[in-house]
Image (cartoon, rainbow, N blue to C red; front, side, top):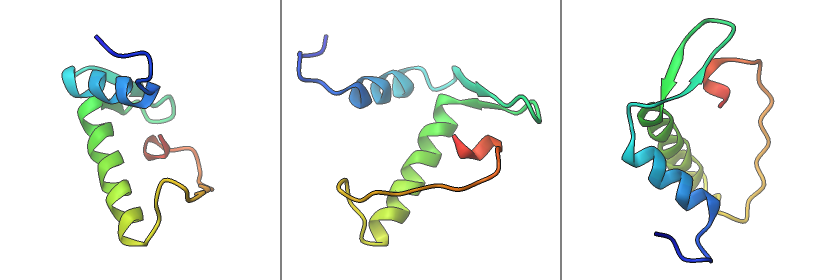
Length: 72
């Protein structure tokens, strides 16, 4: 199905895209569930924001945040 040089990220992305209604996270603190579809939407939005800021795949980004559903 995949060649030997396929990245883990590509495989995960395809899996999330193929089964968008599967739950990928249940937040212990507030009980909120997140589906693959929601996680992909958030990831695409943050990637678009980073691109708009001039960042690319070589940029190093750090996150300092309280534990919430959206830190994923």
